[in-house]
Length: 361
Image (tube, rainbow, N blue to C red; front, side, top):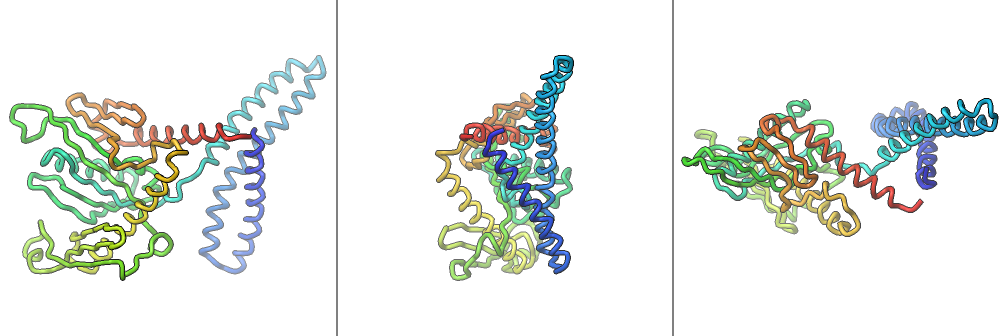
């Protein structure tokens, strides 16, 4: 084990002992918020400390086996014990490295999912609707809540643009790799001669910002306009200026929301999406500044990057970032995304471990 890794583990074990003392003190002061925060950290470090204790026990077993091997009568038995201990040490060290990999601070956040039709006209809008259904079905399988924040329907169905909020544990962690260009190849419903068309949509996955800690919206930097909602809604749509458009003047980011009949609710939703977009912009700018020293292409979230192709005639879905092709398009479009998501997460982990291995001891 590298000295740097061992030093870090020893430091974390010391922190765990400190947390034990702090938690005992918090029980006396009854500061529930601080108690919950410390408890979460304690739970994370306890698992790590347990693994490290098993690793050190395996080290002790290996040392004992080497001493035992000095006795010719015990050498064969000692060699077997040493082999078992070394195998356990290798497995435990690999797991310790995985658990120490940098964690995305946004992983447990809810998300705003933005899907926009691109090239392909009506067919692109229909595909945007298919993508929304795919992600909605996936969210339902996870037990998450789905709320449509804003939508702009196309004439033939589907969406020119749709924004949904997905709320549930680990939402960003699961779907953060979905940002980018999604291409579809299929025969459109409007195609009379059976020709395959190619169209595309863009997907953006934005972690929900904490209104207090992450993004501070200065009212002086906002322009808020009201207008009459368009689309379905009956007589109400034409009579009430309930739709909201918020423009963030420093960045030029514009958010519209007209999903609710309440102007107040539309304003609240629009500001939440705006905060998420500003946070996302800041994050991507930071990533761009460090891109030259990081590989980690899986997590780049580049909106212009074509990340996936859905080929309906061949029944396949191909993720171009990891060269993975799955011939189960119907199941994937029905929300069975675990295989894709798992493969992307495993690739990112492999890249991080490669970087860790390249660091000096």
